[in-house]
Amino acid sequence: CLLGAQANASRYDVVLWGDSHAAHLAPAFKEIGQRLGVTTRQITKAGCSPIPGVQFLPFDEARAECPAFNEAVLGAVLADKDIRVVVLAARWDVFVEGNLLLTTDGAQPSPAASRQLLVSSLRKLLTELVAGGRQVILVGQVPLPPPELIICTSRARFRGLDESRCAMGVA
Image 1 (cartoon, one colour):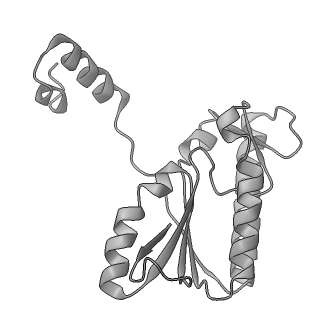
Image 2: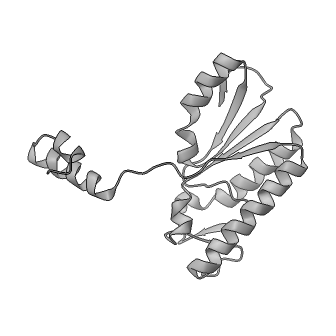
């Protein structure tokens, strides 16, 4: 999907790579690209954080294609010399908190080993992209609503109550 200045062009300057959290940034890239004359290619896949060379545990059918997807994206980005900027975005907290683990061989790592693999894999990716002449923007964690707000809103909707009370922590 091409966003921004020339949404039907075959060339683009920027790549937005990541999972669904990266995809949430697409409208901004479209708007900014139209204003600045920049075209961005959105390459996102739900559940696939931009971390080549790893598998995600626990296994989930939705993430089964992530290793091949990420390797293909990396190869395409490095092969296209017109790409100047790569923006990496994902839901990083799941790796830091240990809800999703990273492995290179399918074996169950400890959360600490998984976090170390996250750091080393991102370092390797950033090094490859920069060595290939790309500027890299690593987008931090997208803010998530507090779980209490989600629970409160769900309860209010179920009970037919005013959801605005949840924002004040009253419900």
